[in-house]
Amino acid sequence: TIETIGPEMTELLPSLAGCCPPATIIDKHIYSPWFEGRLRALLVERGIDTLVITGGETDVCVLATVLGAIDFGYRVVLVTDALCSSSDATHDALLTVYHQRFAQQVETVEMETVLSNWT
Image (cartoon, rainbow, N blue to C red; front, side):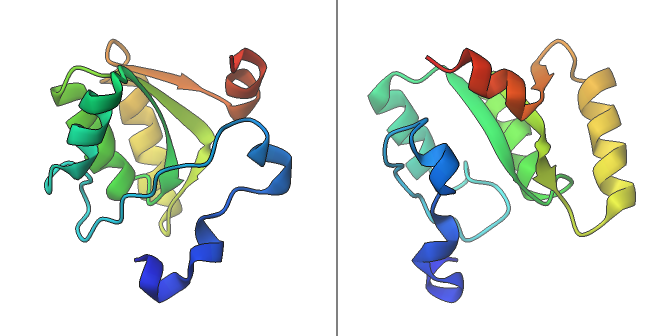
């Protein structure tokens, strides 16, 4: 959580900071960001229909985020070179699952594609 790692760990790199406005941070206490309802409420309030997902633990927290987003009907863009995991084997396995099993629900792209199409 933010209290544990410090707020500076959630700041964007200066080279990326100009690509987006300041973010709203929703601290979660479990793997899924959907369980407590704050994320969903914020997205609905703002009329957001597409999620660009990056993050740590491809096979745990990212997986929970992606599956919840699919369940709620969001367009999911998963940035494959902006993911990491403490387990290379399960990280690689989940990338295969995202490409093969969820190809209809999840768009997989690299960060270069995201940045070149950001409007």
